[in-house]
Image (cartoon, rainbow, N blue to C red; front, side, top):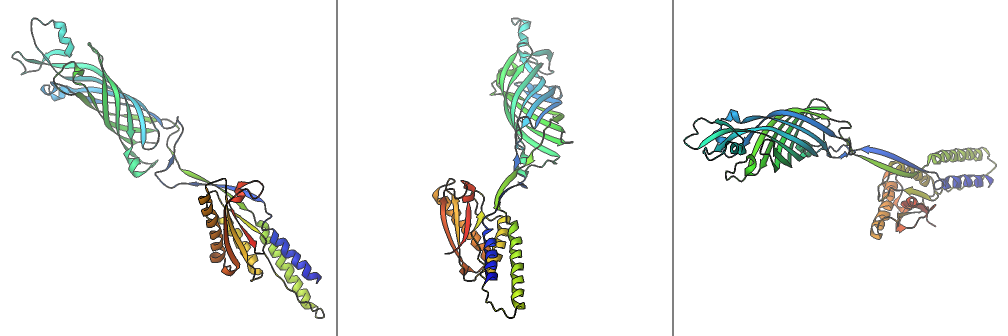
Length: 406
């Protein structure tokens, strides 16, 4: 009788450890492999400057009368910009330098020579344009300051690739165009173009910029009936990208709270060893005939879930596996209630009912399908959202409690 009492006490001690455990919080970081998801940087990340040179052609009222090669004028561009994401960026650019073309002048003794300046004529007549209606070569200094919005189409359709060598970025923008020569003129401009870059390294790139500008008809100080005038330029240059540059892959931080059962298996093994020792003592004592009845019963057990989640963590599955060992050693007629709960402070009643039910069902399926517990020994129930059940801690209410049916 004394030995039966000792054995029962050992069983109850092990059973109660399923609930009286220390709570441990673990955070894990998972980096996304999705090439379309990145972490946006700070305001000071992904800035760059660029400098280029090339040529431009102006399209005015009489430019078709001038030789094509004459119309090619030098052009430069200087820009500073920033990429907010791998797809969208902005820049502020100065572009232009000179423009060449043709201007029409009516030669008359009544027209003062200084009046010819208004159309920026060089005074050099274009051959074949005479007989009272002369067309002269024109030339003037011009510039254009514009702000552009840029779109990297390769990152847009192909995802971010930090090792990509080639980039293609169309852009649109608004600016102010100006003529520096007398008479000076300022005019709003529309801008559009295509920037293609070859990345030598993460910091340096060779870029080709094809840029178009559109202004009103009177920009060259001649009104010829057009709705607008403009210029097209092509420049080749270099871009330097300041640190910090590039983007990090998106990451998700998982926080897991679980009941630590490292001691449960150790105490269970000690109990089984003690039981085996008692059995041997009974067998050795032939004169002592004691009928020993052992019933192993698992105590209340708590399984914690993440906020708004019904899936079991690997830690919870491992703990349920150890609980299943205790249940299998126990009375096959014992029935356990699996009751699901949700934190009433999070979500509405319908959501909490879904969470508590799903959590209870997942614990039931794990015990039955993964660890082979008989369906007859388990009863599923759920309570929806509840107030804090333990230590005024809402995390402990996002749980399932497994208890012996009274």
